Image: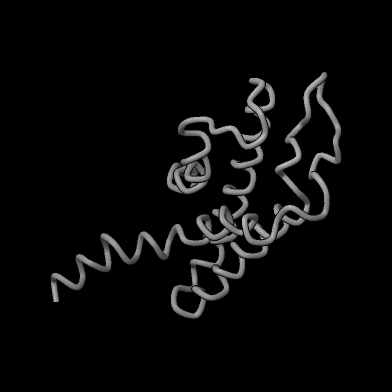
Length: 131
């Protein structure tokens, strides 16, 4: 029984907890690319705000999929719906902030920015524990 508790607490629960952010982060790969760029081609100074890879449908799909994950988890862990909404919003805005920063630093669309691209959305999870 202690072993099962450890497996749940160390492996399963953390996956359940962060899954909405992971799902929100991956949704644009499946649903994005349509609906035009989120920034509608607008620039801040002489640089695009987000670039062509941040689309309306991609952003909307991130939010919808993250919340759906929370709704699926809700019957089992009632508090997870609120957490899923917050993590989803944090993941989406963290991703947009990363894209904004990359445009300011002259990174091309799709170019990798170490750490920011791989773990930026996890800052939303960290912010939930700072209160």
